[in-house]
Length: 299
Ligand SMILES: NC(=O)c1ccc[n+]([C@@H]2O[C@H](COP(=O)([O-])OP(=O)(O)OC[C@H]3O[C@@H](n4cnc5c(N)ncnc54)[C@H](OP(=O)(O)O)[C@@H]3O)[C@@H](O)[C@H]2O)c1
Image (tube, rainbow, N blue to C red; front, top):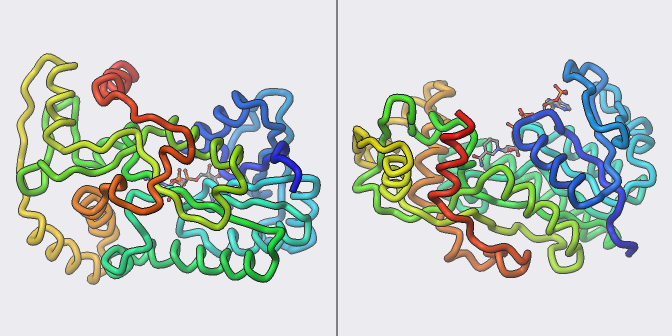
């Protein structure tokens, strides 16, 4: 296999996608941005980045043609968008793209029965991985790697029940459960490390983190950086889960997000997972307080 040099990124305008684009360019990859024809995102990329489009109906020849000459494809679109990822994986085979990183990047561990039962999105992510593994088994020249990173640390803070402007937060139980979280730049860095280690990372779901912390430690870090005590409201985790599950089953999309918060908080200590890949990828934990400082300074 040739080393990975030419990399196509789908979803470069998303919050995570823009961090991945930055990391790819910093690591000197030759980057192509792939967009659907109906994309409304502005084409404001560095001049040495190529932009290619594909028809929204995902016509196979057009997809394959857009991927010609590429060594790797990264999808950073919504994890629920699995059909397009399947079609792109097929196009990778046609165009001999050797490595595919799907839009996993999960808050939660989509390989567990509990996660798949509570949040249907994670069942779809697991099904996509099974699909990619089937392709990789049938076509050994093709491989995939997916990354599980825990809740994003510096993305929607409300999603993880932190409201710095109001100096308040919610916790589950006593807030002492340890869970992994990742900054967007850490996820992007880990993505680049996967491309740099295609043999070691092929056909694996790998767990990465910025740090493995408790809710209490996060709140204490915000209090220290902001110089003010926070108001904290505690929820009993089992009761919270059952209430949100009932709401989600009644069609409440917000409740699904609450279940993701729950899972990514009570069952997301990646250090105990067999495929915890910090060492493999040559990554070290980041400093919680510095990460909080960065979030506070960025407003
Ligand atoms: N761990 C966490 O806390 C966490 C949180 C959020 C997301 N994630 C994960 O991060 C990844 C990225 O998610 P995201 O929410 O950042 O994505 P996103 O912002 O919703 O989408 C990123 C880009 O995808 C493109 N896109 C949307 N629909 C498309 C389609 N049908 N065909 C082609 N391109 C399409 C859009 O570009 P155009 O409009 O220009 O086409 C958009 O800029 C996913 O794997 C998601 O599961 C993880």
